[in-house]
Length: 77
Image 1 (tube, helix red, strand yellow):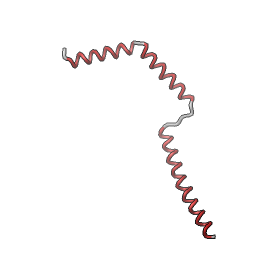
Image 2: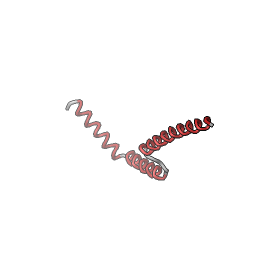
Image 3: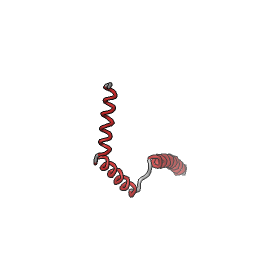
Image 4: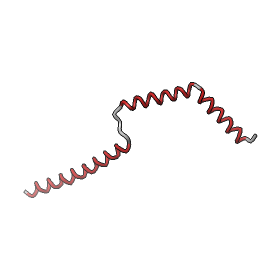
């Protein structure tokens, strides 16, 4: 048996052992617990956040332009 196939067989054995151990159940339970906790929070996706950031930046640019326009109009008086 080649060393590579021995290593692969050993690795598969370890993975099977972990899958059958309480560690797999603990991992599954922790993931479910965290998913349940996150679902109760008012979170947004990264895509939604990025869209809001872009909208705020556009609004900021418009406010700066309008402030300059108002300042210009007030200085003309």
